Image (cartoon, rainbow, N blue to C red; front, side):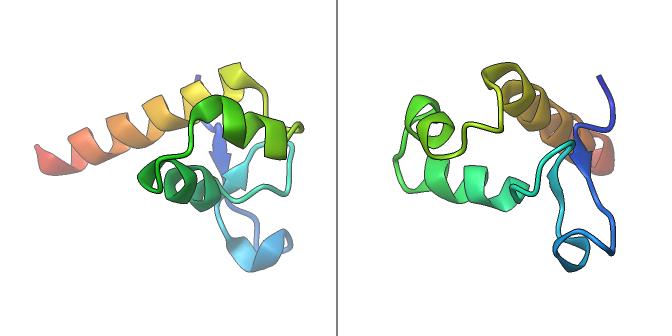
Length: 69
């Protein structure tokens, strides 16, 4: 499902966000790096569904892997 992470210069100055929200994707990464669970993140940001968060992580992973090849 492409386009889960979205950039628009008119939304948070172009910060990558979850499509349909104003929640920056980097917040999820920072939470996970800090040991916070996905469930805890979702409680703090109810506009992001579990499916959206997982799809965004997968999209980021695929993007990274494609850059390594």
